[in-house]
Length: 248
Ligand SMILES: C[S@@+](CC[C@H](N)C(=O)[O-])C[C@H]1O[C@@H](n2cnc3c(N)ncnc32)[C@H](O)[C@@H]1O
Image (cartoon, rainbow, N blue to C red):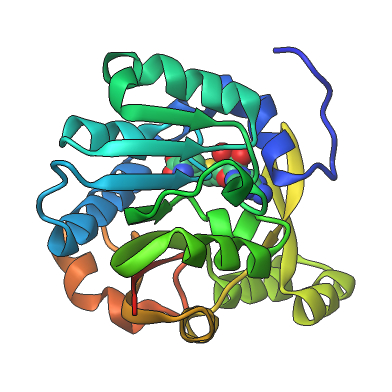
């Protein structure tokens, strides 16, 4: 692997650095149950992806784009980490006729994409990782039409606060209270992530003209059935929240 380890990267720089490892990191039991829950949630609201136009914002290595393309959707991938996007391009080689690849941040993509989309993915905590949530949501709202579904996950503020209180320094707790941000990452680097609560997800949706369809805890149980049934009771405790919005 090339490059150097930086302890205060921006999120897309971190992901660019770990791009070759990214898919392997998500093969464990926890992530498999998380993905099953996300898949079931998408299919609950969009049971037929055939012919749907999907915007995959912060698409990473394209795992959700591939999922959508295999079900007959046309997909636009927006991803600022070049190496992540290169891997996505290889993964989607058989679907290149129905895919567009855009190397860009969520804060700027409307300069390159003006189409309206049926479905928007903000999966993999993209809203927690962008530098400007307001600008991102403004852009997302521009390319949505009435009825468009948005599916996303975020790092949960409540979980961050508990982690910071138990394991962090006073300074980290104070900083989290003030900015909502916590340093996260791995041995390969770290970046600031914005913890977002269920209340904030409702505020964001309302402010940008979206109806909140669902907000639930992600991957609390191994069983999909239990996650679907009881997830809504764990939105303060869970590490990640899954949300579904629909454009009004
Ligand atoms: C955890 S990964 C999720 C990737 C993919 N959506 C998935 O679920 O596998 C987070 C992604 O957000 C991207 N990201 C970071 N900052 C971003 C920004 N400002 N705009 C768009 N994407 C960003 C990262 O480069 C990374 O690929």
